[in-house]
Image (cartoon, rainbow, N blue to C red; front, side, top):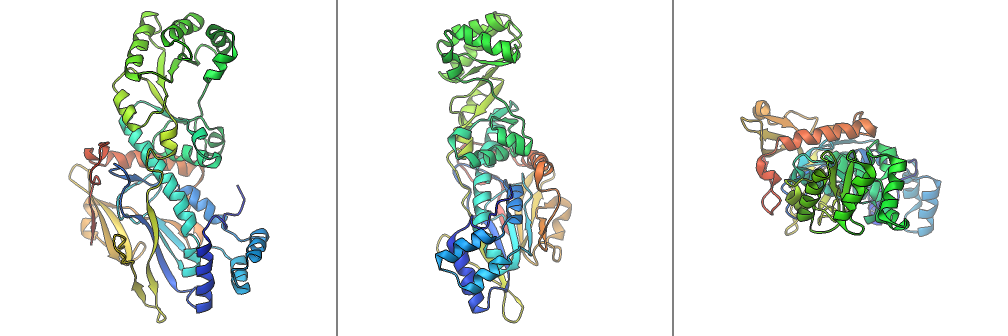
Length: 440
């Protein structure tokens, strides 16, 4: 994955740089902030995902000969700007909520401090990665909560773009999914992979029995047999006859699932296959998972709904300039004031307030020196925790956020963050965010 990411951006990022360079304002120190004004759909919290991918992409944000040659043919940039792009390396600093953390409206998920031109170039890339990955992780987290401890596997690669599928597997794994069907996600990120056979394998053979015999002969009796190609109950009987009572699992991909699952469990037990597990697929989302959580389902396979954010494919994140220096070098807070799109200017730091039981009760955002500056909110230190961590310091990516180690850390962090939320956060119906955001 060494390809340049520099053109994964919008044209207006480059035209702003071009004009700022001409105006002499490109080097003004600036603070950009990535946040969402509201949570989409019925979400009570969001999940930060994509940070590791973004940091890796920033390291490859380089305008090489091919990128510069193409830009030159387009004719919308001055030669001076092309020369500036040729030397581009992000040399600023980035703070953010660590991957796997939960967030709420107004949470400054990413704070980018750099010269204006350096910082504005990252806008589209940061939003592309974090909007998509966080939407998927948020949907996946809702499904994990709804499953009440039963494992879920991501299997939505055929429902999204081939590269998006890999990112989706990573995001859902952060949120608590246990496996993916996508082999590239397994190779690249070390996520456990799963999968056995589709209906086409059964249809290939002259009978369901012959298909089961072929699968068992190769994969062993511990495999999962898909039993609903023809008649589900007969499929279960045939599966146990072929594999014996040590059959690993049966998969159900159709029908009235609550009724079908109950009947299949009863039938397996009657046949002596009491340890054979039941896994269900069939266009599941958090609502159907919740409805089946107390049934004798042992695991779930989720496709379309998780890779599309279950009705909310983006988190509505924006990337705004919130502070800059003037000609005198002093900092100036700036903010958009458009109707329904008002933002809060100024450098910020954040604490999550906890009650006496260790439950999150509020997101406290302090406008002042920002992360790394003078400590703010010290009066809450004994009952809160700071959320912003350094991700890039003077152009250098900080360790622990990328690769397999970063992914596992994000997964563990997510478990802890969700456990800290009040019970209202787990509700699937529409309502207010689980905790309020307060500015200080």
